[in-house]
Amino acid sequence: MEIAVYNSKGNKTKRTVSLDDSIFNVEPNDHAIYLDVKQYLANQRQGTHKSKERNEIHGSTRKLVKQKGSGGARKGSIKNPLFRGGGRVFGPEPRDYSFKLNKKAKRVARISALSQKAKANSITVLEDFNFENPKTKNYVELLGNFEMTGKKTLLVTNSDDKNIVLSARNLKGAKVTSVNSLNTYDIMNASNLLLSESSIKAIETILLNTNTSES
Image (cartoon, rainbow, N blue to C red):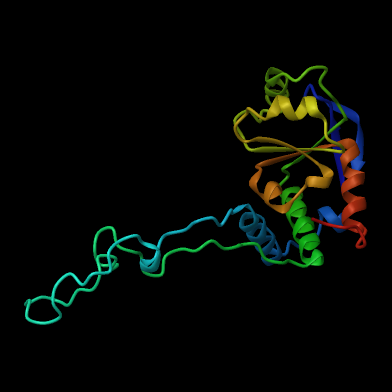
């Protein structure tokens, strides 16, 4: 698949790049995408939720009223879950939400997500660029050149560029990531995918090399 290369001004250059069909032109596996996104979101959860059960409530265990003869239901201690301030029945406990997903499944999910974006014509290739200083204005201007202001965008660079990252981090919906940190959730969450020219070969190297460690 051939795709035009743009400069940071939003103008087409005379060059094109070839996107590997085994990554950008496959039949997407929706279930693999679902599993990878589910794992990503699960790993973000702290799992520190906690409520006290009746054995953890401080209070008297004295029987409130006699067992029979009151005309009402029998009542035990003040820590009864039916009373205000009592313990909670089957409340949440701290837990780990993360789960294992095979590397091959994560690789298929990432390839499927990239293929979906390619088929939707939502991928733009930029020639490599950088900012001299971290300025939000520079990144706003970049998005404006491609008529993507206010849209969810993901810029993928070959390496961590601090000035670009800092320029984009205050913009809602704009995210910058490196090839090594690229994940299925970020790809699917973005409306438009911006790939730096040098990042394409790096993506292909990672996803085509089955022995490469994947997060």
